[in-house]
Length: 401
Image (cartoon, rainbow, N blue to C red):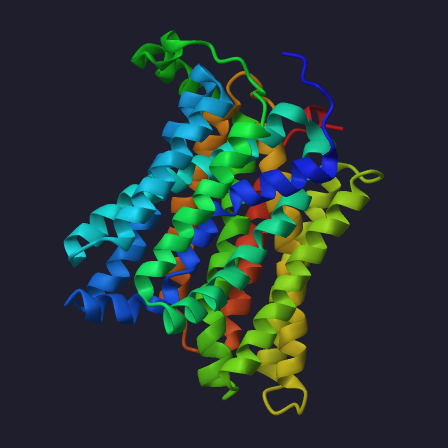
């Protein structure tokens, strides 16, 4: 299918607005969990379970939406997914009890899987190889703004309007994206028809993806790289506030500095891919992640009384997360580039494995955390080393240009 030319800035802005939907749905309500549980007469554990259920629905939804988009086209599936996102967000806002909230959050996660996976598929449909990685880097730079801005916005809305309006805002965002897709986004893939949704056809598609050695290799690298981000997100608050003794505003500043590094890394990756091979950029990202982890481990263990210890640790966090920005964008592109007609299945598989695998790795390592920065840096070094060793199994003659 020959696609018409597209304005790159407009495409990046639109795709970024689409893929940020799950981050908004996940992060904007985090400050409101205590208020929600109190309002609905539930426990703190029930409130945390709404996060887990969203995450589970999100992981499962990506595979279904990706497979359906191969059969029926990207645009109609994305529109249906956004409708699910809107309706379930309204259901969260109107939930009369915690059981209804849990069900709505699970279904909201399924709906959020559509913009997550279809946004990346839109990039794959239009670009390949290094060009795809460049565009993906720009989109990732926008995506990282979601977890930064959403909790701040959620806290402000909670204070001014109450927690139900937070979900109302999520629904309104979904309406805006739905209209954007309806009036601006054209079709990028002619589906293979309802026959592609038959069990035999689905199994054949998954078999082609799951038994493609290089795809699995890059999915594994991507998952390990993404786990570094989840490890960082789950441990940075106790490190800065409880271990360092810094204030919440200072913690927010640290978070903003490191997040800015991730965004800048995406932009730098996009620029360098015009001259540097994508595999070289991927290896560089893993080496940066290892360097940040090793340096942070050494500084934390050998120089605990250094006057500028925490400032050096922040630099090590930035180095590791700069590596993350290179790893995720490039490994995503490499994982799906071999599956044009089945990009939906490939991207769905990537999304499921990335979400569940990184969550499992991140949760396991965070449970072993003692509140200090050292274990986090050791985890950075470990996951990046494991990914680098996996990458060494690639055959040179199969590497893309």
